Image (cartoon, rainbow, N blue to C red; front, side, top):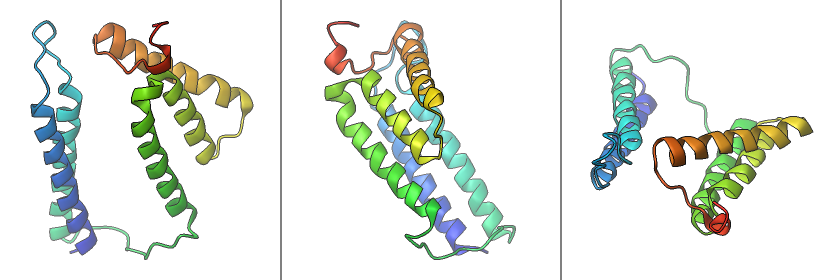
Length: 154
C-alpha cells in the first residue's frame, strides 16, 4: 500500500468535490441543455473517479513506482512550478486583458517551457489553438469569454 497514492487520491477527490460544488452554483442554461457547469462537473466527476481508482489500487498493493523526494534541481519539478506560476498569472490577467491575447502569450510561453523552439511552431500553434477554443466557446456553446482589451473589436 502506497501512502502517497492514498493521500494523492484523497486530495483529488476533494478537488473534484469542490469543482462539483462550484459547478452547482452556476446558472442553468434553458436554451442549450449544456450550461456553463457542464465541463467543470464532468471534469470534477472524472477526477473523483480516477482518484478512487488510485486509492483502490494502492490499498490492493498494486501501486507502481516509488516516491522520490522533490529536488528543485530536477527539470520536472522546475517545469511543474513554472506551470503553476504561469497558470496563476493567466487566471489573474485573463479578465482585464482578455482571453485571446492572454491565451496566445500563455500557450507560447508554455510551449517554450516544454522545449519547443521552432519559431514557426511558436508563432502559429498558440494562435490557432486560441482561435479554435474561442470559436467553440463563443460561437458554438454561446458562452462568452473575457474580451478585455479587444472588447470593441469582438
